[in-house]
Image (tube, rainbow, N blue to C red; front, side, top):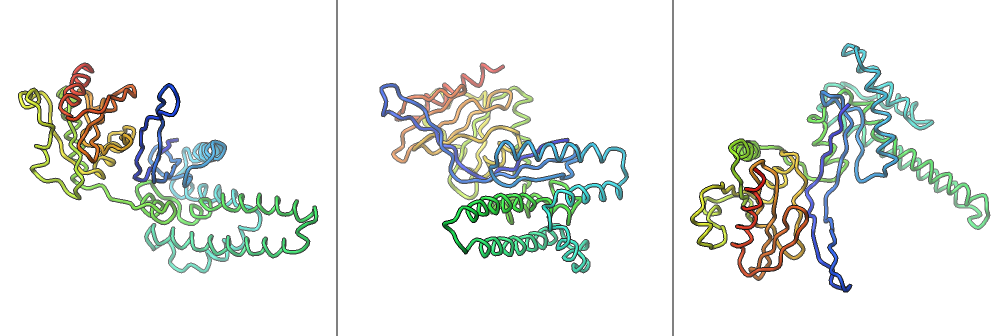
Length: 335
């Protein structure tokens, strides 16, 4: 069994608190969402979880998926399809199976639709049931709200609502399985996680190939991040003015946009680039193995600050040349 996470674009800010006698570092996350997929080794989706969920929900999802994956071993395609759908329907809350069967029977040529169309139809079906279920719960709690019995009923209904909510991925996958991560990630990300899904392009593939080629040649890379929607040829010349930098040719400069940087870190299986508080990321330095060793940010007034490997934050400097030289030395030491 495999686990795959899809993360929406967000920024991680690093700040220094000076309220106490000893300055303390703090992190902040802005925006983004996450979808976790439990899959077969072939990336066939067994279950997905949308949003930041509790450790208990992740464990339950992993146990469900592991159990299902074991049942699929040695089965042919038709048998696998039946086992996957049965497993999800067995996970339905009480009372959900009958309306699901009626809805599924009314869907003409359902399996001929695209994955996105089938997912949307299943989500709309579940959302209607969810609204009806919550309306029924609210109507049943309107009388005698100050007595003990309705309070107990309220707690019970809250638990039932939560259990109903957790049935959503089971309903969707019972309707549309079998699907792979590549087939489902776009509609799930946009329809359920409310995140914009951007397809990988040849540009993304070229950037990854460049980083991998540099790592193979044991050559550091300096990523120059632009604010623009596209990259211009002149962007590669935007390194800080420094004589020592101009004399060096032992590293490669790669220009890219902020979104391309997010994609690259994901494609290279690296952690997201942290944003230094009040500093916009301008240079990301990768060592001779292709791993990030430094992020150098620039403030609105033109000053620079670096976050080096090991979470070491530099002092603020008027120019970024010395910080970039220092980062390149870190990059060379990784040989």
